[in-house]
Amino acid sequence: MTFRDVIGQEEVRDRLIQMVADDRLPHALMLCGPTGCGKKALAVAFGCFLLARRTTSRPAPSMFDEPVADAAPAAPLSPDFVETPMLQKLEHPDLHFTYPTIKLSSMGSDHKPVSDDFARQWHELLMQGPYFSMDQWLQAIGAENQQAIITAGESDDLVRKLSLKSSQGGYKVSIVWLPERMNIECANKLLKLIEEPPSQTVFLMVCEEPDKLLETIRSRVQRIDVKALPAATICQALIERRGIDEQSARSISRLANGSWLRALDELQAGTENEEFLDLFIMLMRLAYQRKVKDLRKWSDTMATFGREKQRRFLTFFLRMVRENFVYNFHDAELCYMSQKEEQFAKNFARFVNEANVLEIYDLANRVIRDIGQNANAKIVFFDFALQMIVLLIQK
Image 1: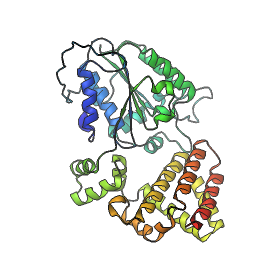
Image 2: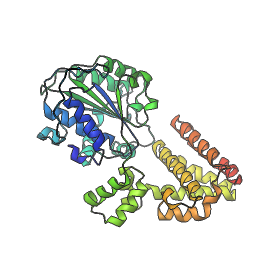
Image 3: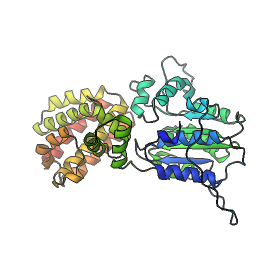
Image 4: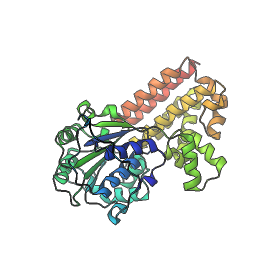
């Protein structure tokens, strides 16, 4: 996998390559940014770039090292590199992946799931392209109502792998996808590994919620923020990579709101967003009409979804609240809604206003917290629906 597989993000790419050119590559980097911006794609491409160089230079310096005053400026490096067959297939022995996993019923009671348990599914999904969501990953590993985490068993496995000498005489690259999903035992073990990294090892963390990481880990990695993709970049990529006509590409790129994953979702007929929109419309109509029995049925339907899908619906709910609130300003440049979403907003938007928008936001975020803490979904969503009745009255 090369940088050609990454959509946009040339500024971050050049910054990473310059670190190598200057021999200033930290032993631990953390790429942070919203879903779909290309963090994972950048990490995998950069990992392949490092392994393709097969450098035998000194161990990577700390991010706190002072620069050498008399050092001559390094010659710029090209982002292009020759992929070996191992890198093309992402089967390089010095490239290690860590990602959230679940516990299958076939696993023993004392077994702590590790990434290698799902290596086949990960490799298959990654070879299809570096842009995929947590939901796609959960579907690939057969998760139902489980929340994927990174266990202490994974950190033990990583210590074992990285203690081995590099098979190719260069870097050992450890890519950690969503480190915020580590449990506390795993986080503490990884912290020790980052504090005392094995020789020639580079950690590349791909993070969406850095505030959920231990402060001690955040302080020991160099953070690089990856911004949401510009609409023009998404539009161009849709035209070149997906063969979409320019007018459709422009429309989709606006709705994507900086996420390539969202753009891909918009390309598919019958997307999950359409299902979420129907659920959103149903909730608002039933709450306005105060049909408590029907709201109970609505909450029962929501409870049948897995935890991750419930959280995605709530994220969609927050977006729709924002869009309907902004719709009241009658400025098309501020709204990012599909035709069907806007059609509903024409009559509904006035019910989301200064009197209730902040309370609705707070309510939805509390539900997200409760779902994340494994609260009873039927109770949580029924209470959510009942409170929406009160908030819509405040119009």
